[in-house]
Image (cartoon, rainbow, N blue to C red):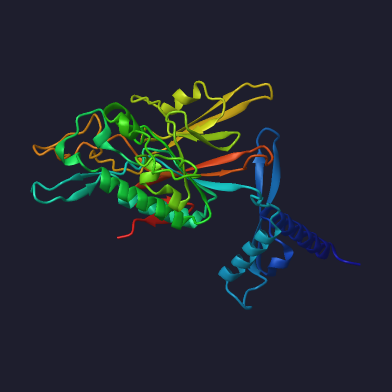
Length: 397
């Protein structure tokens, strides 16, 4: 028969094992992770309850454990990494692949143009008002995303010569170099996206050309190349933007008809150049006041986007209005109401504009695919740099 002392010892051991198990369970440790128990300290103390006039005995257990892999292959860090890998493998989270979705890159207001920054009347030194660094970043993004569509929202040519405002001398006679650069841009976009649909939407600056002709040289407006017998009349006059920029050579679609021209990615989102502007606030709010579908617009040169949810027969409906910004210079050299010039008519380039450079990437379900949903992602560009999906892009030197 066991002695009372032996029974008491066994009772303490049983309580100790039970306490250790409870500690392991509460800590989330598995028994297989425990190699050995190095030390167990049991401390008992008595606490007097003054209200009841009794003493309460409490027991505290201190346990020092060694891991099962101690002294074996691998370090503690390696063991921790193995545990993390196991947890990742057991994860039930699944990433749904975007089957049936397409990608569009949206390029806003490039404002291709130049001014002569030389003061020597016998020498011309062209200075761009568009930003070649921002264009470089945009072309890199196009190459990396391999989009289904590239949509240029308009005002890709500035055409200061054809504007209604007084043009200082350094900005005059810059139509030809601007057209040359625009034709080169069509080539560059096509090379960056060989199989994409490329759309150039007419903006108010491109519309300056035919308005100027209609006003000051109407006899020259709408003229095409000579039509031979049985020829089909060409779509564009020789003095039109798509003809001058050789868009047919690079399969670039030109949507004439500012401000009505619009390009639809699906039934829920359209892209326009835009004609609304709110200088003291968000232009997006103006579009959302009467918008029944989401819209991406240019014209304002600012990065904006806003959402609004309204009631509809099918329940709450959310629409978005967004501007990707611009790809022209924002330092004050683009002709505008804020332009300041020196004695020779050259822009000071000091005040800057409340404009932001950027572009946008839209993932969308094309017409006829499920609910024709979309996702809008803006990309900010500053000083020839930008980050998109964890990748930094910078202008080529």
